[in-house]
Length: 208
Image (cartoon, rainbow, N blue to C red; front, side):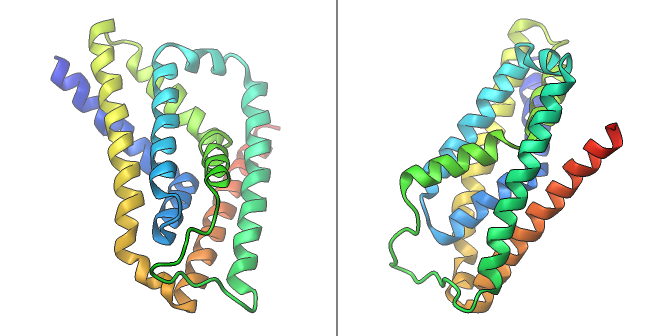
């Protein structure tokens, strides 16, 4: 029973993490740029783990009881994604593009990387709707001891995914050494941010 709970938690947790595109794209970009990779991967996994644990403890039910909180989070998340997407689009089309050369120093400070990771991890309402409410709801029927294994599986999947994504991105980092590769990545990031923001705005308008 415990192994089944752990496996179910890992599979569901992994599926939900992979679906959160904006956060994954940010982690991927940091990994390709070799910029504060460990800090970004660790903090992303810790944020996800905390939300998973809170969801299993009943936070998901509490959030569901206050629709206004979800609306506010959606508006803030959409605004953040639109701003970040616009900055990425500007970088993709500006005259001079930043090219990552092996041996270059990191392009951002530790503080900036932490703040951006917190923003992508906490300002995306899909994180709360999927990771907290959905996963928390599925974890609820488990007995307390089995729920611990379910949550452990989901948390394990989170750590494995973010570190694999961040450090695995180095395999395609040579693309960043060419102006076209750097522009293409910034354009892809912008489109992903706009797509997620459009989804949030569409959901908001549908509820009006």
